Amino acid sequence: MKNTVSSLGAGSAETLMHRVFQSFIDLLSSAGDAEGFSKAIATAAAAMDLSCFAYLALPLRQGKEPLVISTYPTDWVKHYLCRHYDRLDPVVMQALQDPEPFRWGLGLAARHLSSAQHKLLSEASGFGIRFGFTVPIHDGHGPIAALTFSTDEKRPQFESCINSHARVLQLMAMYFHAHVRRKLSGDRRLGEVLLSPREFECLSWAAEGKSFWEIGHILGISRHTVASYLDSAKEKLGVRTIVQAATRMAAAKGNSHN
Image (cartoon, rainbow, N blue to C red; front, side, top):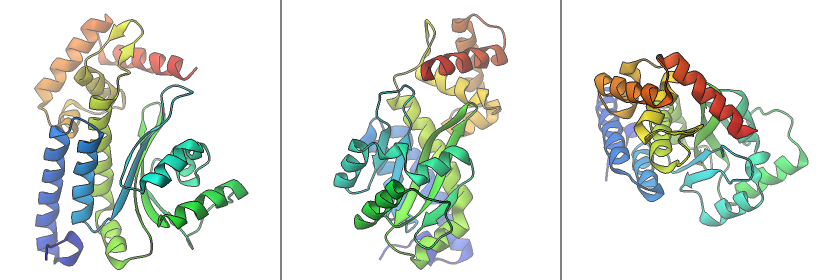
């Protein structure tokens, strides 16, 4: 029987968590498609007694569907997207407003819900999605994605993991989003300038105020490599500073939402 993080003592749990996290980073680095990314987070989640997950990235332009990578039942995901539930899902709505991770589910305090939202939650419950922990992912210009771990009932292992490792899960969500955006997003054009995946990613994190060291830590590269990508991005954009480059990115993102 394999060990899980929640079933071990404090010292052993810390060691195993380190291994789980390192394995997660290795799988992320080698992933090249949605299936690979799903395997990375699913493997880590299983080791932490978190049975189901769902990553939802909002579209940059109106008229496009959100990107969903999850282990939720396929029929539910299709139904959710077909009904455009991302536009009224109370979990998504909270993630849009609050950058801090939060719990949700039956019996937990919640704001006033519309009849359509009650219907959505009832339908989700029918697929075993009743309780969860959601990590909103915001960049410097607003909310862009969320990673949720869910369960069909209040399980001690699930609660223990959330209580002990909420910040680790938040960091995993940031890493996951950073790698997915770099490898699966094709929207890397700022005006007439097309940035490479790494240039775009480094500039995105720099625009959020991350240091070279922090960006390198998130992306698994050295701070000197980060500096090189940012220098290349500045040269392509014809600017002298990161602040100027970030301003160009903000303007481009603003136009993409209009």
